[in-house]
Amino acid sequence: MPAIEGDPVIGEDGPIIGEDGLARPPWAARDPLLREYYDTEWGMPVRDEAGLFERISLEAFQSGLSWATILRKRPAFRNAFTGFQPDEVAAFDERDVERLLGDAGIIRNRRKIDATIRNARATIELRADGGLVEFVWSFGPATTPMPRRVSEVPTTSDESIALAKALRSRGFGFVGPTTMFALMEAIGIIDTHLLGSHRRGTSGIWPG
Image (cartoon, rainbow, N blue to C red; front, side, top):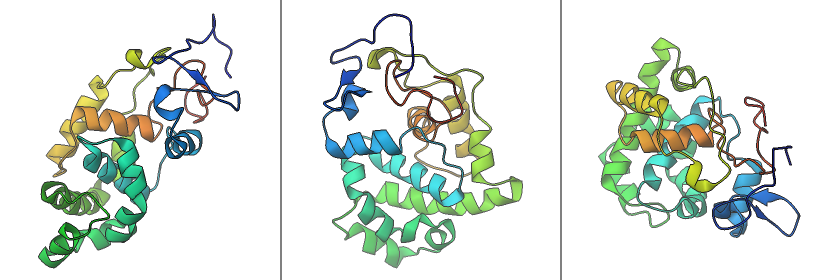
């Protein structure tokens, strides 16, 4: 656990100490699937095109739903969207859309499905300007939040607002400021691990 001034906040809004003695935020403290995701993946840098396209896609599908729901369906999503390979998803046609709408393993929302296909095509177009990864990471801030409690974690930032606007101008959909802030948290552009969490500073980008 990183050394911080004072003791970590314990309770529903602050770090919760697990049976393993490690501190996690409440959302990652109880559900084994969320705990594994938090401990091994959330907040770690994603710098490959397919991986980033998958994260953008899943964040879009998560809108209005719980992240646990998306994680449980992620294997089905990966199968349905051919591993989130942009070139393959970009080639989807109406038959694929109908197939996806009939797939009970994923979120069957036509607007989100259509947006994912459009986003794959937009990802390909971005290659001429350095690619999706360089584009998204260019919106990294100069500082990162330092929350002690979940209630202190922002839901948007100037950078997420700018990123959302820039992606929309490039043809992306379902990339609002809140969704893009969640993406920036998930892929390590910012570090919103609570002070006192055993994951704080582990991305290698921000100090603990």
